[in-house]
Image (cartoon, one colour):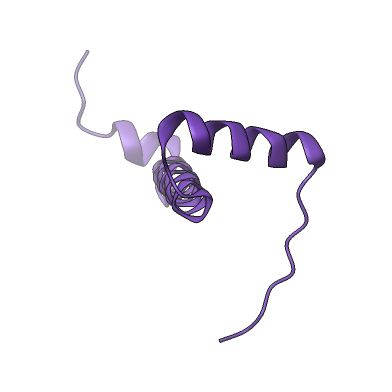
Amino acid sequence: MEQIEISLRQDTVDNLQAFSELLGKDINMMLEEALRHYFEEEQKKLIEKGIEEDASMTNLDYDEFWEGVEL
């Protein structure tokens, strides 16, 4: 497993310690939960972006797109 060096600002560390005490949760568990939530949200954004990009791409020109449509 690759080692990653992580640095946190002091106010983040203070919040982790305070919430750990308030919630009775292990700091590592809180970080895992926060990162899991972050990854889920970012994945949703990437999927939505991909859908938007796919929808904006078409190989039909204007006339081909509207051919046969009666208004």
